[in-house]
Image (cartoon, rainbow, N blue to C red):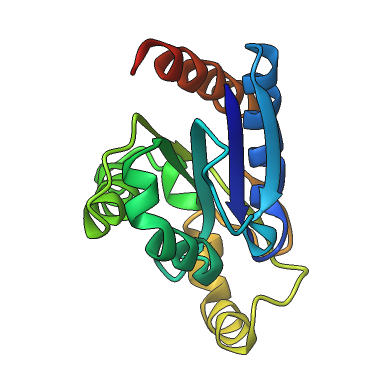
Length: 181
């Protein structure tokens, strides 16, 4: 099966997620291309399975990932499709987990009338040593005390991506894709 794994990232955190998924799919015997959505092919006709993912900021997919889905929605409906996101809400242990999963995956798929064979919801990477844009930087500075009180030390890197779960999901997608027509 020819597989295209696309990812949208702002600061590089989702690229490694896509590569991990791609490796799992290769291990299952598929021919896989892992591509930044900014470099997505003009046509997806050659692919049997397409995975589209994004990092999130301010409750939004990267604009390039969403633009790809919007532009190719009709073609994606005729393909085996999986969606995934990498975000800090995915590691929550409260109702926020389900709210985020619905908003970032279920509602996103419904917006484009897509029926993915699988959806992956993975932790994210937060590194406050990089600028995340003026507005986010100001919000972090203003709320630093509250963030620390809630367990988020802005002086540290927070990587909540579960590599074993991400790899397992890649293997699961391969099996689902092989079993569906």
